[in-house]
Amino acid sequence: MWLFIATSFFLFSQNNELTIKYDTTIFSDIQTDCIGVNLETYILNDTLYFIETKKADKDITKIIVNGFDIKTNIFFKFYLNFLNDNYVKSRSSLHNFWINDDYIYASLGNRVYRYEKNEDENYYSNSSYITKPILKGDIYSADVYKLNNDTLLFYRHYLNTNMHFDKSTFWYLYSLKDQKIIKEREYLDCPSPILTYYSPNKVMCFNSTNVFYTPANEYKINIYDYNLNIIDSISLTKKSNWVTIDKEKELKTLNKYEFAVERLYEMSKYIWDSSSAILKIQASDEYLLVFYRLIINKEAKYFHDIWRKENDKWVLRKETISQNDDELSTFSDFVLRGNEIFKFSYKTPLKREDYKNENEFNKAEDKYKIDNDCLLTIDKYHIDAK
Amino acid sequence: MKRIIFLITIIVASFNAFSQTKYEFIDIYGEKIKGIFSDTTYLITFSSQNCHQCYEELSEFLEENKFWNNSNINIFIVVSENKTSISNATFRKHYYNSAKSYFDKLTKQQIFYNTNISGDKAKLFSYKYDLIGEPKVFIIVGKKVTMLFYEKFINQEKDDEILLQM
Image (cartoon, rainbow over all chains, first blue to last red; front, top):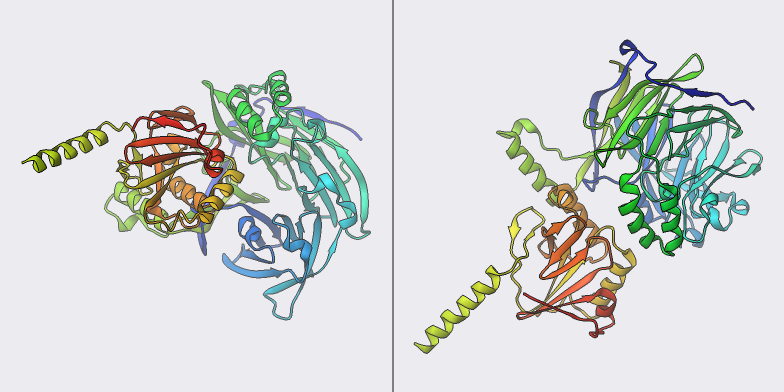
């Protein structure tokens, strides 16, 4: 195992700067809350699949899987049915799903289910569940990701009130082919428990060869191979306006209160509102996007950076992109594939040209949003030279 | 003549009562409204950051006691969130959807948004409360206003009832 730490300070020239460019918006007929919905996504070949987890939670026995054909811009849907399974009926949490040519898999509660195609190709039904023996107790709300080598990565980054924070983040590997654990549970560095309380809390991601994890309270991203051996690490040690979380204060608050709601209130007010952190990382084979907050004039502001893989090294290509300058935000739900970005957003079908002025249009949009749901859209962007 | 004087007195008194109210709401469309309450009115504070179990218990209590179907009782949800959020139509609708997920009989006419917010505190009548915290129920009967924490309200314990100025 070798570790290479690359610390980059403004190494890029103006000519090499990258930017995120908007391409187009495609409307679906899926009606949703205008503020957005919680989505789980999976991309296979040229199709982007997504499930609204809230809808799934309402009726877990019949889950709608939406598909979006990236090449033709066409939306479609199919269904996952659960058959006679009392365990599933008592659950209300869909974590993740993934698809291959023959099956669809979904993790629910502490099980991973496999679905087979019915005669009616729009329906898949569960034939069996897998992995039950290895999922016990505190793994209950873990996320499960299928890596490209038919391995499942079980990952958890959440602090509940009964758990000590140094055991809040862990992962392990399960081989789908051999049906067994191939890497035992390993605890990850989670220096700051408060990070697990705030969304989007996406501090782990992967591409076709690597897994990325950030301890988040500092600007550092560790890169692992698929066996979870650390092979590289990128960091910006002198990021301006970065205010590290006051650990002493945090631990004091954590020990003072027993219940999460009390901790949350105190921590929000006295620690989180004045601290920096990485909130989300997203990687493709070529690009890594890092979303974080900085404290500027005592206020939290959100930014992101673009890293690109060049000659096997990750190089910072655009730093501190303000989220006012870019429609992509820390809280956007999007999928990154190569240099393409597919962002989910929620819009009214009203058109600006049908109204006399901006004010009238805004009023009409507001009224529409109150009386109707919005339509889910996919906004396409790509990362390109400036 | 006595009747007319009495009527004028009532009108003036009512006018004074409402003009003295320092609370103001907006409705789901963002229009300013004054809370004008008749009969028995319950105002339930609502924040998306509050305890969800509390709203489930409150909802069960209102259902079991048939509060929603009682023509002598008005129930309003008073959303207490930060000013920026409630000035945005998308968020107002979101809070309505969120409240409706607990109180399924709630209509768009039964949700108000408290504009009397300063920092992380809201004010309703003379009572200041934190935006994050357990739900409170303000009970208005005629000109008498009292406030109970939700747990006392659903247990019908009035020992900690706080009397407020209209």
